[in-house]
Structures are given as C-alpha cells and as structure tokens.
Length: 201
Image 1 (cartoon, rainbow, N blue to C red):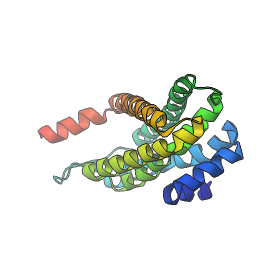
Image 2: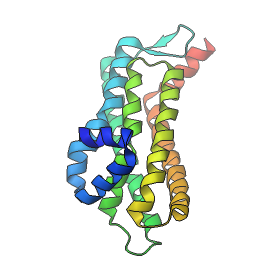
Image 3: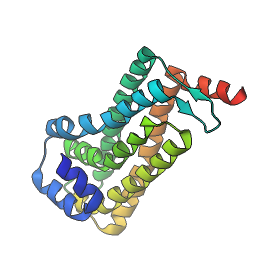
C-alpha cells in the first residue's frame, strides 16, 4: 500500500503502469488501501473536533462531544467509501463508449487510487481551522484531477484528447457527488447549524 501511495505522489506515470500490471482485486484494494487511507481524515477530524474544536479564525471554537464526534466520524467514513464507489461507477459508465472497457471492479479500483491525495489532505483536520482545511482540500482535489488526467488514457487505452474529456467529466461528477454526500453528512450532524450560530454570535 505505502509503495503505491508514495509512487502516486512522487512518480505517478510510472506508478500507474505498475498498478495496471498488478491486476489487483477489489477486495485487496479496499483492505490494503481505501479502508486504511479513508480513515486518515476521519481520525484526524475526530481528534480535531473533540480536542481542538472547529475554528473560523475569529477565536470561536466549536467542539463536539465524544459520542457526537464518533457518530459523525462513522457517517463521514461511510460517505468517503460511497464516494469512491460512485466515482468508479461513473468511470465505468464513461468507459462503455470505448472498445474493451475495463470491468466495474477495475474502475472502482482506479477510483480508489485517484482518491489518494484527498485521503492524505485530510490529515490537516487534526487542527481544524476552516481555511486550512479548505486549502488542503483544494490542493488534494487538484492533485486528484492530475492523477485522473494522466492515468485515464492508459487505463482506458484511449488517446490523450479523449482522456481529457473523460477526465473532466469524471472529475466534475465526482466533485458533485462528494459535495452532495458531505453536505448530507453536515446537515445530519448539525455542523451547519452550529457554524451559522457561531458566525451570527
């Protein structure tokens, strides 16, 4: 797992070739990559929200109790796993337009690897300043888009021009799905209300 994480961050072109040659199973991906890395933002958020508290930069901090944070963390974790699955399905849908499309499992595996920068950027939630988390999230999204762009032509055996179109479409849908899922999580656990009350006060 760690070899692929480092490879995707430091030498992505070479790492995509290695991943493609491995023919990894979906079970192995989740057991050795997604389930572990998806826990990084969840654990960091749990520590940050219970020990430090969310801050908007004005001195007001919003802390959660241990049980509330645990419940939110579980929902957040399941949301991340669902987002990976949905993006994999989107890639599979786009791939059907081309000859010899990869299987659904292969598409979900690919989605799991392109999400690596997003997983890693979640570590900043251990000190949950809103602007810092947003900055880290944007950086993670940008590098995820880069991994998608350079990986999709080889993955689907298509040209770079076609790969660009697939990458943009997949990235756009993926961002919308992630925002929708996270939005539901926020509303479910009342973060939105607490933050609004903090701003108004």
